[in-house]
Length: 251
Ligand code: NAD
Image 1 (cartoon, protein in one colour):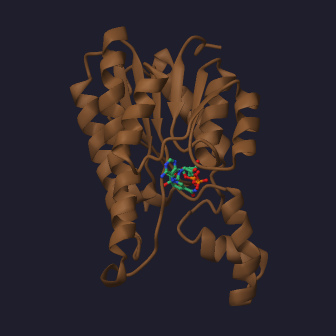
Image 2: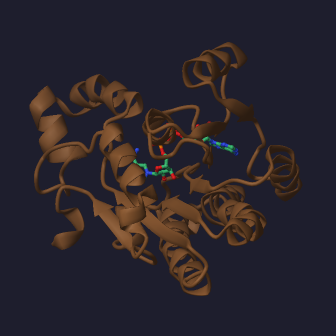
Image 3: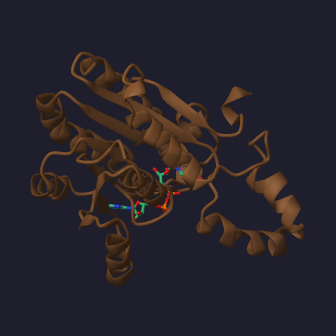
């Protein structure tokens, strides 16, 4: 339980990858602060499971982020994970969607980081882990805002890694390919019906078309990588972008 006594804020941790990271950090003893949207009773259950605090700040709102960071106090581990997607040709891309994606996937991480760094520097130890994406390293059409935000968060991460290099604080990205979540599982029957394909064809030729090992990343695998980045042995690992994508970005 090497994270006992460490306080970890994981944004977007009411579901998916963020929740898996919260569970993995909790299993090593960290005090968890959950953040995200969702039903109050489901969030209460997660709080009970993880013995966690919760702050429901809407990360599209800079003032709400300021209030959250003031309320929760210093954090030792900051995981900027909340993110959203919209798929559209650039000429039709809704301006409000562009602004929201940049605000959530990029600007929110700037605000949480600038507010968390003074406490980390003061204690001489900190971990900033940003959930980027394979789309921080490569692009797919119709995802202009998402790809721009994810490339940008990778650049932001490298920059603060350099600024913090002598402070005991590391900053890294984790860049998953397709991660197996209930959202993806739920798309399979509709895609089978819409395209007249078998379950295997939908998985291999549609969902995993770009993932050479033809396997989904599991959320728990992302959690395990986040735990590694918090270890003392990872103290010299900073400014890196960790692909966990079955070989997608090796092509
Ligand atoms: P998800 O939709 O399951 O979770 C997103 C989380 O962000 C939820 O907790 C949600 O409540 C929260 N959130 C959304 N809008 C918010 C807001 N305005 N304020 C506060 N919280 C908000 O998604 P996920 O698949 O777990 O994705 C998590 C991260 O991983 C994202 O940054 C995403 O881009 C990245 N990612 C996902 C995949 C994948 O295949 N699922 C692949 C690569 C990268």
